[in-house]
Length: 150
Image (cartoon, rainbow, N blue to C red; front, side):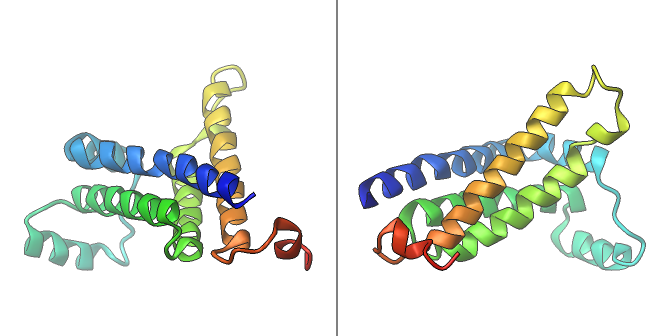
């Protein structure tokens, strides 16, 4: 059983490593996508301007780098089973936030929103797999022992 869990964890982590790398290799395209969907709240806008002035980058560019880096690092850590629970929790937050912010299926008519609904459901299943990683943890114990207290 541990070999299957390790293999599944590595295969699952490839998703985050690949998507994070594509975001980092195409930072401007990712930043343009983020800029089209995300509005910086007025409460943090002054701080965002200060960070933009300090880094000479726009907030969407900084977010693209942060999200891409998080996905690559979290994918590697989940694959290596080093801090997997913590990085799975971070990815739950990331996937849930991106689903809410970028999957706007509730504002679309029924036939046109099918692809976006499927993407949101895929994200929901990814969140479920991340919760399983959080629940199983790093210990080398049987699945029955790990899930016996549920």
